[in-house]
Length: 121
Length: 359
Image 1 (cartoon, one colour):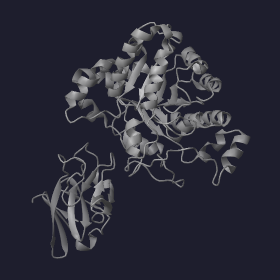
Image 2: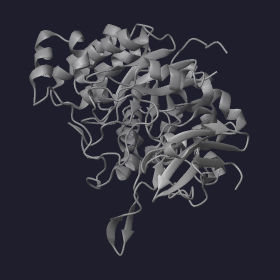
Image 3: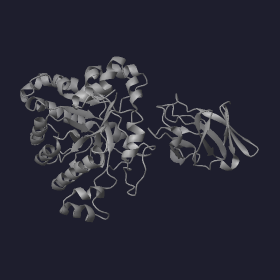
Image 4: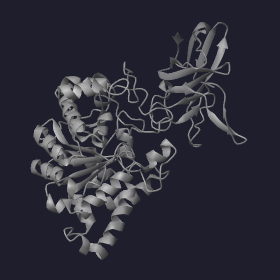
């Protein structure tokens, strides 16, 4: 992995599979790299609730109620904080139990055979 | 300087206690059931795990309560938060007191206390232990308290919120007598309500979800505190000190107001309760902070608990490594600055009569 102050590059071959996190460091910040529904996403490794290392939380599939029945949402699309088990949507950082909270997300793009995680959107 | 009065440790499997048990009990532990003796446990599972996910290594036992090693406790908690002294409460060991078989419970309690002493307390000078005792057999509990309660590694007696009858009842007098003689504090800590020989969590009947259980789990503790106050335990056993651990804070305010009012009308049925019940609380009872109620506006919490005299009665508690762990600085920040020193260490140091930690 190569890193500058504002971005980190790693080989595309190291992209995480769905349901797995890859930890990277960008400009001194810990970031979790995830794949959801084929797309790569990067999430700050800090829970906005109490500051826990969010990206060491378990990746899960949300359970939703649709038309009165229980359904599974997008596979491996949320992470549960390891401390208090609050759920965050990986793609958006949105907290599913407190609309005021959002985990920080970072831009991810594929540049040739490299993944670029950037602190700049 | 920080004292944490609620850290949980436990054995990996009950078989870890075998070297500390007598022969007949070893035989029962090994041969009972299908895979050896099993403790009664909760019918509700936490939907995403009881334990903080970043602090344990799953051992060979792979039970409900994953195994926390002493090294991990040091690394992830004692060192990380610079904890001067930590008080160890049990995990599954809390279930001994709600086993129907009181004789077996007594032997398991002794084995557990010896294991705790050898494996944790003698290994790490920052740790102190709470004795687990067979509360369902108060005479045996008193013997266990007298056996180990004088050792400086143990700073009190643990009683689970789950119990056959409330702890103020006179059947428990031998237990109170023993702690009074040794001036040892007692912590009543929510644990295993509804399980084993304990009655239902509330008179409403069995809740369906873990979230319901965890919201109501202080119910046993409220019952015990009211019982202890109404039975005049602090009059009859004046050296007794009591901590309410993991029952929240706000509910106690309402119960104490209501009890004070009821006492005015009903004093004649409990004449040994000579003072207004809440007045005993300031001298004898302390409350652990975790799980600190967290309204959107922290000022509402401060106003709600002010009656408890938090500057003198609150003890910081993390509940490490459980899922509802409260981080120390974030806990203290939610309280007024003038309360923090007491909550951080001073109240616990006085209550448990701990050495003054080096800063």
